Amino acid sequence: MAHVTALHLKYKYPGSDTLALHDISFSVERGECIGIIGENGSGKSSLCQALAGLIPGFYKGAYGGKVLLDGQEAAHMDADTLCRKVGLVFQNPFNQVTGAKLTAYEEVAFGLENIGVPREEMHARVREAMELLHIYEYREHYPFDLSGGQMQRMAIAGVFAMRPEIIVLDEPVSQLDPQGRKEVFEAIRTLSGHGITIFLAEHNMEQIAAFCDRVALLHEGRLICMDTPARLFSRDDLETYGVEAPVFTKLARVLQVRGQDGLFPVTLEETKRLFMEKRQTGAGVLEWLE
Amino acid sequence: MKSISLYEDKGTFLNRTAPESKLLYILTAVSVPALTGIEWAGIAFIALSALLLLTGRVLKKTLPVLGVSGFIMLTVVVIQGMFRRENMTPVFSLGPCVFYREGLYFAFQIILHILNILLSFCVLMLTTKPSDLIESLVRRGFSPRFGYVFVSVFQIIPQMTETMGIIMDAQRSRGMETEGNLLTRAKAFLPLISPVVMSSLVNTRERAMALEVRGFNSRCKKSFLNPRVKTAADRYIQAMELALIASALGWRILLWLM
Ligand SMILES: Nc1ncnc2c1ncn2[C@@H]1O[C@H](COP(=O)(O)OP(=O)(O)OP(=O)(O)O)[C@@H](O)[C@H]1O
Ligand SMILES: [Mg+2]
Image 1 (cartoon, rainbow over the protein chains, first blue to last red):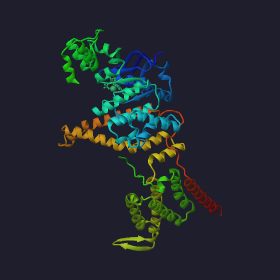
Image 2 (image 1 turned 90 degrees about the vertical axis):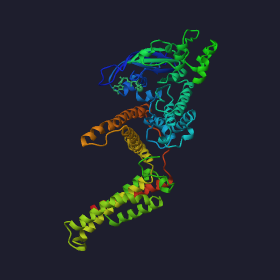
Image 3 (image 1 turned 120 degrees about the vertical axis):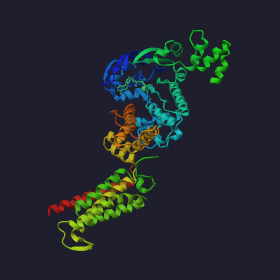
């Protein structure tokens, strides 16, 4: 059985007259990492929130279709079950600091206190999460004093400690500096390595291509296509949906370097390998890009 | 660390005392003089609070608090001392203003009350981590939502004002009108303030969602990371406080029966 399934998911915000999500259906296996891309306003955040059950739990508005988590309908789960099942990480790390705690350690434990995890286990989980995301050394720091990347990893740790099977990240690095981005992407890779099903909304196509097993392209609330990065980024019509392929793919397209499957490469390694194989001089360009 | 809080951990006995003991202390300090009607009881509690603040090494921090309320107390002295209806016996005069014994005595009683309440609150507030205080209340059945709001505003507001400052500066540096007549300036102020309002609306919504996904609305019984602090000393202190209140109450009932 698929781990996460969307069936004819529709959603309209209260007071709005266009659908933010328009008949979206897909299914995702356990442990997959799914990228969510699309131009501004295409519905990425709305989809993320629907997957985490905040739509329709938190937002009212017109809702149709369903999201199934492990075969159970998200809309019918209570707050408690839902937050043990799915975690959601937002764009702005600052907004995810509860403000109720004076140290990063207590901050990570916040969710565990809410769902009544026993104290011993709470300590074990908080420590595990913080060590995994390399923030254990900041455990005594005042949460608001952390850097953006550290703060975001603290937010991820807070979600991870709840032991969800699914983690949805909505542009988790868009407000971070390059160092913070790197830290957070490493953190996401770690989560993925733990068998967690991941949804990652992101504007950086290179990262999406490097990270994700499959990518969902949204446009005006519709799911245009959900496919492997190579197949999706090899499409000719990406520009009509307001997205661009990774630079490597664009370069390969210009030079018409394709793999055996007829698709363009999407990551640096692949591109390099193909360029070498075809003995094209483009390899020099890539080294420079790197 | 920026937080609107008067608390600072000095590692003193008072810091280690359970918040409940200190809450109960306020109740004792306020109720015992009120119930017994004995004036020196108020004075005794003021002295005790001062002593506690001294041993808690926070007496200095009490001064600004007193300074603010000092103004109110002064007003009470002036108004009651000069104009209280029962005023009969002049004590002294400052130029044309005559102060009377009855009014001054009444003002003195009010000041005793104010000081007593103020100082006993200081004993709690200056030596207790706000989050510990709220947590101890939540353990006793106080709503976790109210508790959260209570603690978090003190942390989040200073952070938000900082962000707002940044936005305002950014707008201003884009050449917002700061000159001209009132209408021009008002018009210029709107675009200046609207990103601030917008961002705080979005932030509030996002924050609410972030709390939601961390089980804030879970109906489970909450657990607590930190164990409840209740030392043997706390047990004695609380027993003593309760005994004091009970005997004051007994005294009151006795007076009333006789
Ligand atoms: N709270 C809301 N109320 C009403 N309409 C909303 C709300 N949030 C989003 N929308 C609308 O829903 C549509 C999808 O928005 P969404 O935020 O999901 O897009 P997005 O892909 O995440 O965009 P971005 O890249 O800017 O984050 C947009 O047309 C947007 O205007
Ligand atoms: Mg978004």
